[in-house]
Amino acid sequence: MDIVIYPDPRLRKKNAPVTTFDESLGTAAREMFEAMYATSGVGLAAPQVGLNIRLLVYNPSGKAEHAEEEVVLCNPKIVFKSKDTESGEEGCLSFPEVNGQVIRPLNVKVEAQNLQGDAFELELEDWDARIFQHELDHLDGILFIDRMTPASKSQAKPALEDLVYDYKQNLADS
Ligand SMILES: [Zn+2]
Image (tube, helix red, strand yellow):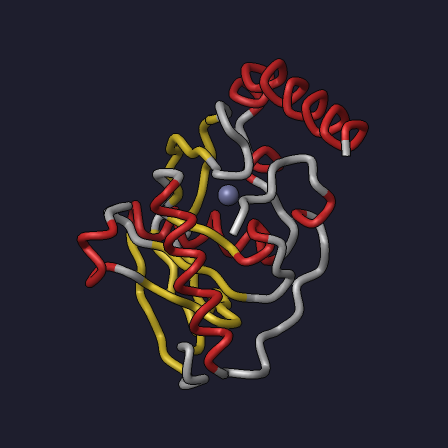
């Protein structure tokens, strides 16, 4: 599973709800974890591997040996978010060499389905809430550069231009 890199248009596409909870869905989630660990990430959304469905995975530890911290969410939605917000540093596997400050609600309450299609709720705080909100944004075609503070965005500009240049080069070569 290759990670889709900005500005690939698949990162902005509409993502369909998961409706079939079969073995191939479980396999996709497993492969997303493998791709995430291989690139030292803590979260990954399906469109980042070219699957335009509402599936995301994360592991706040970022470590394969802490599999007990793995979370898989199908069709997640936020049902509550705190008024308290916090600025924090974020990166994204679809944006190598880019990071910046993003302001997000500190706590969120989430409804989602697991790989069997069973509904459940989750209350997330701090780091977990930040990872989740970043990945949920991917399912809506929203990227962290859209939410970066102006200072971070201007700092990231040269790196973003490099990514656009590389993407065009790759298209020309293929
Ligand atoms: Zn991301």
